[in-house]
Length: 214
Length: 260
Image 1 (spheres, rainbow over the protein chains, first blue to last red):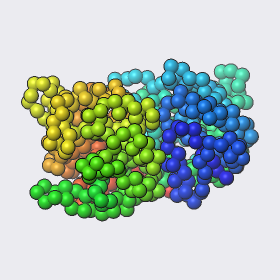
Image 2: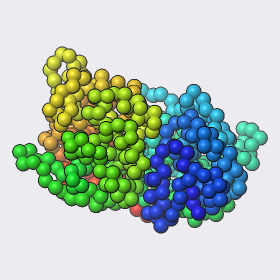
Image 3: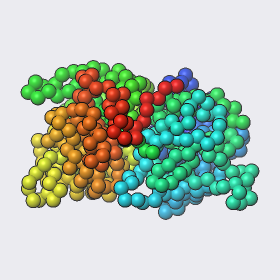
Image 4: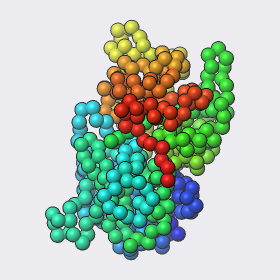
């Protein structure tokens, strides 16, 4: 069973409907037992990192999500879901996140004439092959809405090489090149809303549903 | 590079896409879900639905329609017209819409922008604004805000209201020119540029599009982040692909039609 984590962080229906369009049924749940038993987990979310973490802790799902990732089963984070699995976020005056992967969430720089949030369709240039990207051309446009971006910790800068995530694809906005999609082991996380990214986004979701996490 | 968005607006009445024709009332153009699904397949970047009678009739938005659209359209879409309070917003978003648009409600109760942004995130809250030219010195931008389809001025300067809405937490502004709307002679470039330069959030230009060159103008000279069209495509005069080809030919970054 595929489970979409419900932690009061926005639009879960869209993810469920996008999967259904690809012939995949998923359940939306906030029950730790249901989440733990999932064969694969989708961790979506919109809004702010602080309220997302409050939602997770309030429902006591923070450890549930950590445990799921540790189980080795396939895990997909989307938007805020891709941010709060990192260690910290600058949003809401600094927010301690789940710390599943090393990295921090940073604010886009304020540049006159550059609108924040980064809202709309932007290209993702693939930097590494991965099963979830199968059949999708590098440089395809995906739909983004965010004011903060994930910054991965480089494997070489600290003794975290075994734990470091790597970018699968990069996007540029406001002079920053950030990992729009990244992965480590059984975890894939995308900053863009793959469920709202048209046929390419649906393909990514379908690919995820056929991926064994290895 | 972030692309410039082409957005199609569908005015809905009694579950039919409709278009106001001057002195002739409204003509029905088709089923909103079917039309939305076709525009999605054609490669449009985003859709906007306005329930044009919900507000006048004091009834909630047709949630069934929103749910049906969400089953067939996997790009962002926003819903407006007839949003009365936070619960209406929640219902629309949970039905699968990416954003909700508030217009006259926000004028009457600006706090709804803050409440909506707190509850659902700034990116969900679109301020819809109708503005028209004025020579009244009370409005320094030269544009005043109106509601009820342009009939009722509300005593707000368009640029000041845009800034205020941004401060309250609006994530985007959909800016419609009452003067240009329906003329097919082009967007109000001055209005769009003034508002877009005054805020740090994206601005969607609306009203007046007749040919693809009008979109190019408002996305460059008008500094808009997205351009909204309706009758240009509803009557088959132009296709999504045709408009995007013209935008790309003018050097604008656009999202190509995805093909797998």
